[in-house]
Image 1 (cartoon, rainbow, N blue to C red):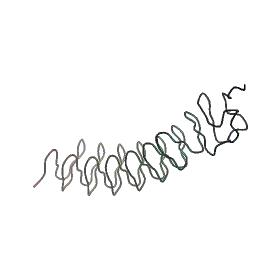
Image 2: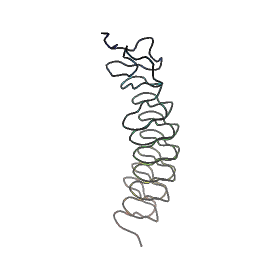
Image 3: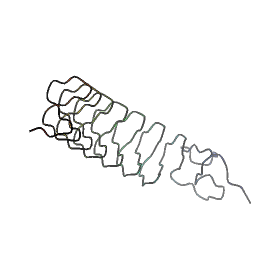
Image 4: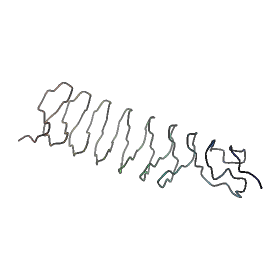
Length: 175
């Protein structure tokens, strides 16, 4: 009886770096190598599916060049703790780009539907929606030049911990 290989052999898929994990390609009894590898804590260049259905590649704690699906269905690329150049879906449906802890140039959706850009802990130049619907710009912990909506409906600008040049709405609805 042959024991399963504990490291990725040269016969296994070239894109899989599997060590101390369970790869479906590693067993010596496998007659075929599957098209994708399930590698965690390694360098992934192919598809990974963790608690979801992935149609493209997923890289966690690495460099992502293709799609990532985490508890949702993503149709474009997702990069967490890296540089995002395409779309990210986290617990919602995003139709444009999302960058967390990076530079955002397009849309971000976090627990809501955003139709414009959202930048958290960065420089905001467009709209931000956090637990509400914003029709103008929101900057948290940054420089505010336009409107901010936090747990209320603001029709003018709100700046928290920044320089305010217009009205503020906090926990109330302006007339």
